[in-house]
Length: 193
Image 1 (cartoon, rainbow, N blue to C red):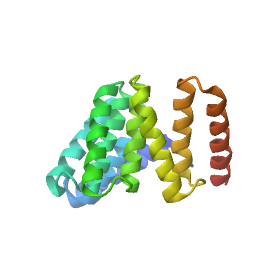
Image 2 (cartoon, rainbow, N blue to C red):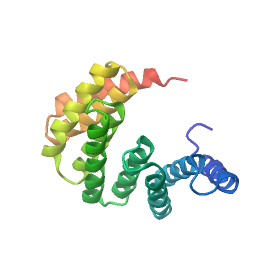
Image 3 (tube, rainbow, N blue to C red):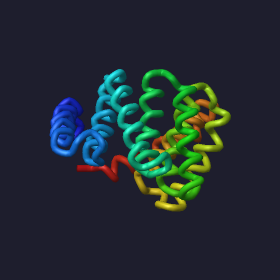
Image 4 (cartoon, helix red, strand yellow):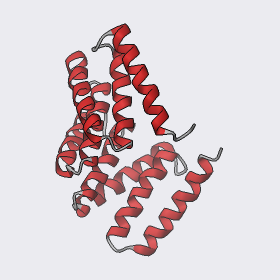
């Protein structure tokens, strides 16, 4: 069952419908279910469904909690993920940059959610061809993750994998391959069943 997105999608659709009926459209449980459904829809490539759902959910979160609540910012970051998946990389960068700045202003630049937003922004920048802008951001984010969570933490390793991709794109093949192998080895160990 692990990794069965189709089955997850069905369960999330049921959970969303049930919470919508029980709690109404603006309840946190309903909005969380809608956000999770949008994430799964994106991962399944159902990008129109994901976009419509995440935009509606983001507006409802903002209406309920204000623009800078962590739930709102997490949902806004998913908007950027959907935009990037749709190939709208510049718009994804704009959204992710806004989310990152709001995290930094309201929490701190080293807050774990701010780091996740920085990591996503760096990915979107690379996808839009802005590798030179992405590189220092991903280096800083990888270093901060390592300092905050340790070098073997999955979030650190995922971020370092993105750094390996940036290095590969810059033609630093040997260093990129070394870092990628390191991350793959440690992630494999972390997620063994």
